Image 1 (cartoon, rainbow, N blue to C red):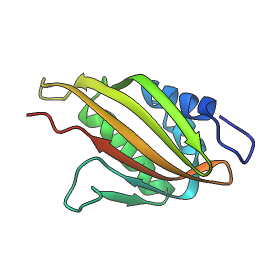
Image 2 (cartoon, rainbow, N blue to C red; image 1 turned 60 degrees about the vertical axis):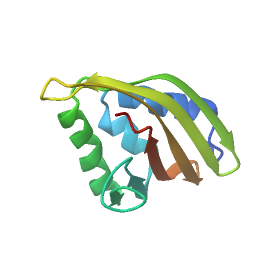
Image 3 (cartoon, rainbow, N blue to C red; image 1 turned 180 degrees about the horizontal axis):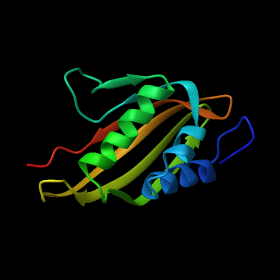
Length: 126
């Protein structure tokens, strides 16, 4: 991950690799202590909101519990100032055996070289 205060595409690539490696320590090292993770679904317009490192880490680990083999493939990233985006295809198998394949993206807000806000968006497959 980047040590500078300016995030890079390489920073987002490493962050995505940490998700695919199911490495919560590396994921959380990229995130601010007061980070926010807004999921791709939930009861509110922005999905379910998880605030603070402990809550975000718990949600990250919950994703792997729901889709143990989840991966984020074919990723593309860009950065503009204190904002960034990662586009990907989520693939995996839910614990009930249902296959998942859906396009999505994360919109990021950065502060001091770390992820402050991660907002996830998913295509709605029928």
